[in-house]
Amino acid sequence: MKIAIRASAAAVALGISTAGVLAEPLKIQGTVSDVVGHRVVVESADGKILVDLGPEADGQTALKVGDKITVDGDMKPGDQLHAESVTLASGQVYELHKKKGWLEWLTGKSTAELAPITIDQAKKFASAKGYTLTSEPVAEKKHFVANATKDGKTFSIDIHADGSIVANEPFGVAEAKKLALEKGYTLTSEPVPEKKHFKATGTKDGKTYELDLHRDGNVVEKIAFSPADAKKLVVEKGYEVIGDGKPDHEHFQFLGKKDGKFFAIDAHRDGTVKEVRTVDKTDIKWGPLIQ
Image (cartoon, rainbow, N blue to C red; front, side, top):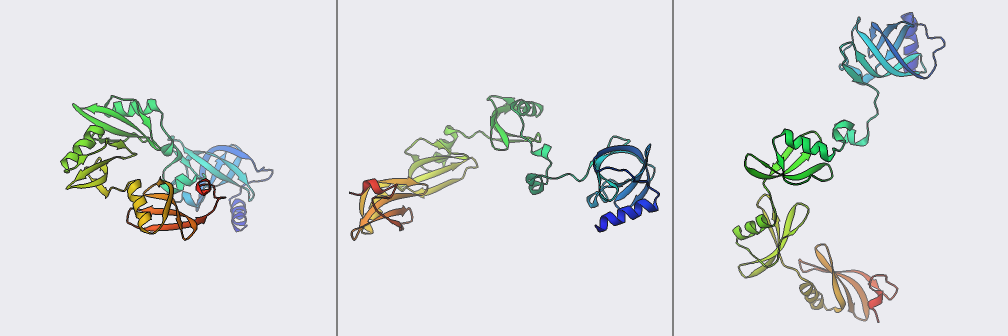
């Protein structure tokens, strides 16, 4: 209410007639006759109108007396026009009182900047940067990925909505195999593509590993942990294993029996065995295995 009172007082002091103004969308054109904080008075063909630019406009619009402007907004209680946009005679447009989506607040980018691009736009961006595509762009979450050549070299490129392109050396099965060999591993399986790397099994110095082979040349090794390894671990902990183990991310799940009770068990690579819960024949997952 304080803002409305101050607005009305300013209107009276500046001789602005507000009688009969309705709370509705309004567009006005005129000349700035007064500047009062983040409010301005616009003298239009219909008289003087008090325009509220909002606190966020301070230092951004820099309107001054004599500027010819066009204002789009809504008339609000308090006899003032709340501006949504202001257009200067030069064509410069200032967006005001605009509600931001959560992504805009989070990233600081406009909706247009965050908007996805089409395949055709991705192709144009690539061409403008001098790339010749050798594959159709494939949509990722926020960009497109494609294979391309430039200056006689082959790349995997990420094409972003702002027109920027990140070029990476191609990294396929052949490159993953070469990386493993260079690091001293003998692969015992074909590399399988994950989202950003390849997975494979290999041996080195008489040991068997599960390998993550990355584009940047990094190889992450883990001691191989097979269903047989996991089952052996559960048995060593004193459980009778019922049925086969089920893989779950980095561990295996089993139905185990101990001291006449049945348990859902997780067997982990680090040698730990965890009783998740006791189960009986009503258990959806393990019940059918209980005789």
